[in-house]
Image 1 (cartoon, rainbow, N blue to C red):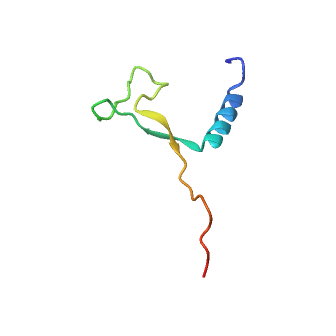
Image 2 (cartoon, rainbow, N blue to C red):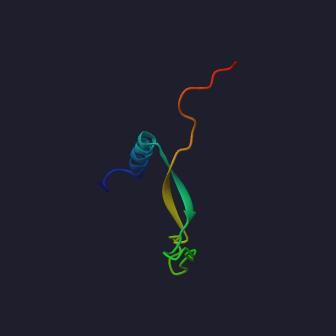
Image 3 (tube, rainbow, N blue to C red):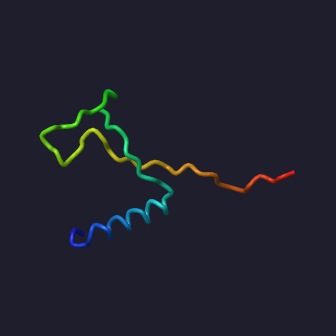
Length: 68
C-alpha cells in the first residue's frame, strides 16, 4: 500500500489507535540487559536512541460519583 499518501496512512493509524484505546509514545530504546541504546552517527536521518511504543490511554471510565 505504498501508493497511498503518507497522510492517509497516518489518518488510518490514528483512527485504529482511537478504536483500540491506545496512544503512541516516544521512549528511550533499551538493550535486552536494560541499558540505553546509543544513537548511530553513521545514519543521520534515523535516531536509534528512541523508539515509539503503544501505551493504553489512561482516563476516567465508568459512572461519575454522586454528589451528596
